[in-house]
Image 1: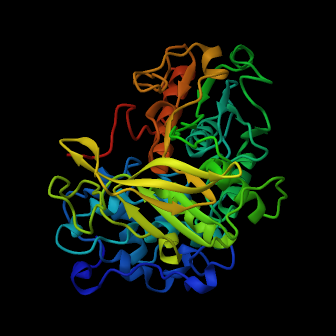
Image 2: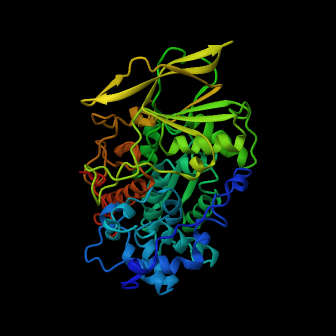
Image 3: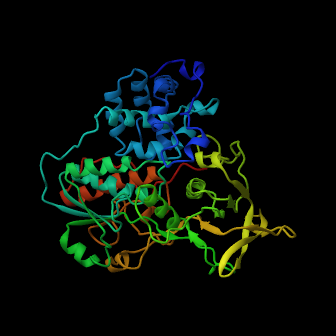
Length: 487
């Protein structure tokens, strides 16, 4: 264990962010030098707050099963090399989760029953960022090859995790990505101010040096059909995500200036990285309305701030969750509470318990939204009479989530079965209804967190390895039926 009295004597301290007036002028990460460096001078003290809790519920909160008490103790003792080994034992990409995961491990922390939780996420990212700076993260190529070939379709976190595990097991792995560069939403869906793409680039470089091959700009299901994929490879892993976007079919939807967040954010990311985008959707000088109160909505907010929006309003149909745990979401569950992201610190107004009734327009473009306040009565959404209002908007962004994987093309060609939610069915080894075709990440689970995607990629890799080799030594942190800890 770490410092026996650390959780009593040391207050919780988070990594400091750069001043708002400074960071909104650029696209760099909001932490000075990155989150791993921002708290490094006192990170050992923060790791020392990890207590001898007996049963570490943080394991239960983390689908990867991260060995959190072990690497907290090692960081407290400043044994950074061993801490890195323990971190990598369960997580291929801790620099991704250390920046993007909402840290369900912290809400499950035993210290959090009566005090502030251990800063697990900050310790995690400090370990890996220091390791990269010290050049301690190296390729791990296999000692021999099995002769088996695998295609991984999709290069998001699930696909990358599956590919790296399978490559290290000695299989020959090719990752197919329809965009021009690998990384999926990690590259084009996550703004630079949350995670600079150097984090993705050096993991791709590491994987290539281990032997993984990336084939970008390939629309599998079109230029390469499902049957051709099956003929070329011994196994296929579908890590295509849940990319069918939820829409809002209300009057005025056809007006110009109304876009999906995942049309807006990738363009902004490309421009921030110095690429040219023809016909870019921009927030400059506009009243921006973001429909959806989650992380994607916050990404749209921070991006709109940096583009110079005149005003930003973020709408949420649910009520304000409040700052305290609801009684029906006790420890160690992940509670629905009011959270403030870095983007929310920068600008914008958050409006809860409202629904969009109509988009108003001028000259074919959106000019405003007609809203009405709503409440849930016996679980049913009900409009509150006399609460209609109109707010201005020249740019509307939908950040309302996704309904499932795209089925037209590859999924239809392979003939895999779908479940009642429209996701791809899989068995306990992550295999679909088609022999040799496996499914990992949001395509089988539905829209979820990055930490679940990496866990699924690792588990699916174990299933593929056992299918091809007869047995496997690869870890499988979760079964496909696992779900977040809830009441």
